[in-house]
Amino acid sequence: MKRTFALFAVIFCFTSAATALDLRSGLVRIATDDLTLRPMLYRLVDIAGKKKYEPIWYSDDPRTSFIVINVDGRIYRMGSSQEYQTSQKQIANGIEIEYRSIINRVTQRIQFASLAGSRVANGFLVEIEVENFTSRDMKIMLKEVCDTWLGEKSGNHIALASNPKVIDEMYLTPDSQEPYIVSPGEYASVALLFDSEPRPDAVVIANWKRLSDSMFAYDSSLMRGFTLSPYSINDSALGLYWNERIVPAKGVIKVSSRWLTGGPGNEFLAWLADNYPPKAEQQTTKAQQNSTEQMPLPALDVEAIRSLLARIDSAIQNVDALSDEDLQQILSELDSLEQGGANPIPQN
Image (cartoon, rainbow, N blue to C red; front, side, top):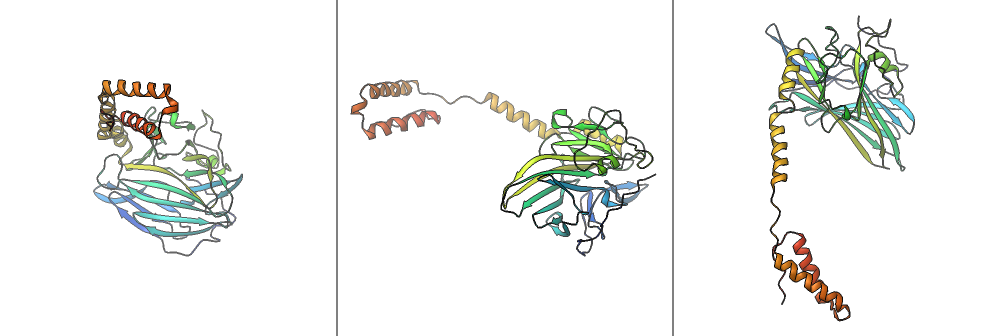
């Protein structure tokens, strides 16, 4: 039984009339709902020899995925708050959904991305931008609820590198050392990449309704599963959180997340274990580390150093007779040595 989404007081007020967008690249697709303008993300899959696009977030009611902003202690849910007007447009390599109020603008950009060494688009970069229209600094926090659903049918809602079957709510930060958070499906899967920037400051794995009903912060409790009877059965989601940031007057801040798609859950998890992070990236990083460690120190001209030290000592003892030209000469020679020069500037 899938959820019955709680009705908003105002669903379509301040929503611009627009034609739904539908873009495709490589293995993935981005579309917008023609009524709510909410984004829908897909992965191309093969089912019994037929190609189709499998939604990676719940798409029957795309309002179940949404953005919440905390502005100086006041909380607004994008797409349902009367203070914000919604519009959309196509941009280079993706789409842009804008939520505009009199004090700020929250923009969600979703662009195709080639991740984990792929030569074609196989994922998405999801960026949230906040622009401050006012003449004073603004404190904001961001929350994005992503209604992952691919693993709900099998009961394997979420998988981590350290735990292939997460059954309880969890709170993860980068200190958790989890490289990815996977929603593994029967035909398609999606991973929120969590090993490097850009990424959220924290991720909550939780029952969707509890996460949706929470105004902003969410207190996840271990041993609490993904069912809230009788309202939300076998129903999970990810809550992405970005900590407090200052948006300067007339300024802008941006945060992002990366989403890698793949095939059936078991295959995708095995592939991630063997191939992520990409071997080429690992080798490049290791080579750079080794190169830094083995890089020889610049050769030093010992006699030049001794000569310069003697001149400095002499200048100190005869400081009253030291001319500006002599001082500049000493400083130039010292600067040359500090930058790795083997020979100081010769004296005239």
